[in-house]
Length: 343
Image (cartoon, rainbow, N blue to C red; front, side, top):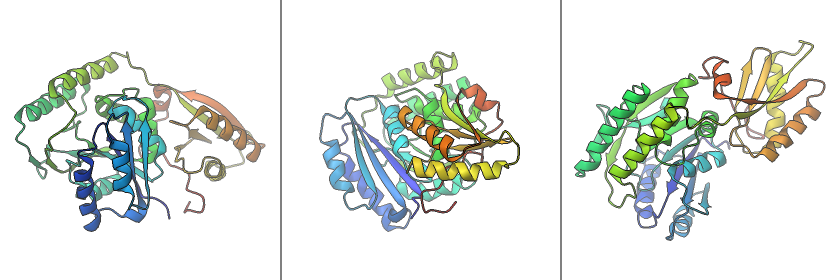
């Protein structure tokens, strides 16, 4: 059965809060908001010094699809989520905080949003949202940060920092490859680069309840986030190029649909459980390989050359500007199906 959703939970010294978060996820499962047979949960332990990893293993054990990944050192929330995205196998990928401060019963709203858009993000600022917090400083800092971000980026979104976001997985892989920020400002930069690539973003209402014990420091982390945002705007955080394999027919006899079908089959057989994006552009099919190990890129390139001979198969490194030159990417990023799954 094809997995519909991968849920990534970044965690740093969260052993004391994971149980409460899992109770909220279990309640969402019991209410039918999460289909455990089609959902995987990945906890990424970001170099914790407590029992986060072992606690997560015990709590996730009843779920049919789960994984705990431990980073050797603390790198930041952005790095932890990026790691989870690189391992996600679902058609869609979401991330949410370990404390589940956002009620996971809103997950169906994210999936509904992804039926028409590439990104669906929770927003505590929508009229239908409910926010419960007595922590005035954090609330004020959050609102101020969002205003500064909106001014600096022109995103026009009501809440960029809500830790409850979902993507079609091919879009998630591409965006997290393009964003090198390891700490909290990755949220903003993901949205900025999504806009630059012509991907659609929708906001959904959430129920948010402040949970004590967060490792976020409102003043220090807000300053760090703003610094990263403006460094990126000044071009000091360039996006890494995306390894790409281009398939085309020099004779012009094969249609792009035929090229895509043949490439999809080779990719699905070579990179099992790696939903890399495919993009048709004119008579060519571009296989984008974000967050893919260079050795696997070389393996796929060799397989495509052998299996698709005499078609033209070439390698290319695509910058964000060369991706933009292909036109808006919304609705155009597709992943090969899992072996035995629907095309």
